[in-house]
Amino acid sequence: MSLFRKCLSACLVCVSLAVMAPVQAQVLPNFAELVEKVGPAVVNIRTTERSRPAARGSMPSQEMDDEMREFFRRFGFPLPTLPDAPNGPRRGQQQPDAESQPRGVGSGFIFSADGFVLTNAHVVEGADEVWVTLTDKREFKARLIGADKRTDVALLKIEATALPAVRLGNFSHLKVGEWVIAIGSPFGLENSVTAGIVSAKARDTGDFLPLIQTDVAINPGNSGGPLINMQGEVVGINSQILSRSGGYIGISFAIPIDEASRVADQLRASGRVVRGRIGVQIDQVTKEIAESIGLGKATGAMVRSVEVGGPADKAGVEAGDIITQFDGKPVDKSADLPRMVGASKPGTKAALQVFRRGNYRELSVSVVEFDDPAKKTVERDKKSAPTAVGSLTNLGLVVSDLTEALRRELNIKRGVRIDKAEGAAARAGVREGDLLLSIDNVEVSSVSQLEGLVAKFDKARPVTILIRRGEWVNYLVIRPAKPQ
Image (cartoon, rainbow, N blue to C red):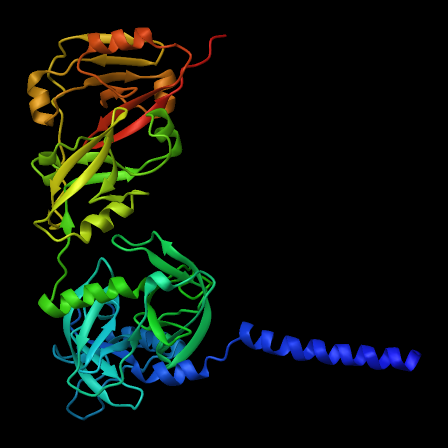
């Protein structure tokens, strides 16, 4: 009986191991086939720049050479060498204007078989020449078709055909926890492969696009290389790392390939990216603000300022509005709005839903081309004498009416000036010189009207005010001190 039990136990162990083997194989995939399939389309990118004569009083060239040589030696880059020809420049002398010096190393991948290559804009920024090296050691001088700094995408062209090209994936199908690999040239080491998982899909670290967060090891030189899923499809362009030292510490970011592909198509067509804008400066909506103004939940984008004469101004958008929908799509957080507007074609009309003083309003705005206008500053005429002064002791405010001249100068139709803020108002962040535009969703037009409103309030409850400071507006919650 004892022998039978031992045999039975041994059999059960064998069965368990047999069952576990395929499970382990699924958990720990073999990336060799992916690398063989995609690897030939990944390229090494090196850039050069023409040296300039050293400025008078700068460090001698011998010292510069030693420092640069040590830097390149440490990180495995090709060493910049000086010519040894008898008639060439000697150490310690200025270099000729036209001599090219190594500038940086990055990665990229072949976007199409006719020679278009995608990489990061920061990889080629400031370069005089860009060289692309294939895995078969062929090297081509690349032409920069265009670069977009806001998405960090650049499109290059090399004169070659029948090249191995990547297959593009779909960002919307990407799942958190999914295995992905990166191929690139960290520190100039070509065709290095690292693997990890997708940590998050929509990190708000970019102006016009959410980024893919992974734990794939990415280091200097990996920038511009592909992020690849288990189907051998490119789902992103490796772009950034979160690091205190400059090296990988476990968090890296990639540009979603669908966004990068749209940018590449525009660069290919015209050499630049055209985006829309509506002329507003926005901020996030906090839970406290949402509850205090009756919005319910923290959603949408709060308008802090409106460009005078801009599309939003013409559509009737006001500072303090909460934009909750754009072109029929919900604006869940403030970062969504620039992406929605930026993706809109200039010249189109879009429906806008805004929440203003407790009610939703439907507006129509015409999108114009984004031209990154310089911000204007407005100086107040502090010499203008107020027409009326009021003291709101319970809130810690002293306010005054605005003169007509100041209203015209500031381009506002309502509001009073805050001459003093102390106690509860000071604790809420109110400052002298701020303009008070509304209180508890009611527009403020004069000191007398404001005093009438405050007189009806429960003196112990918090009140929400909308203030303007310079070109910006913000909601603040004043919490009066509780009676002793």
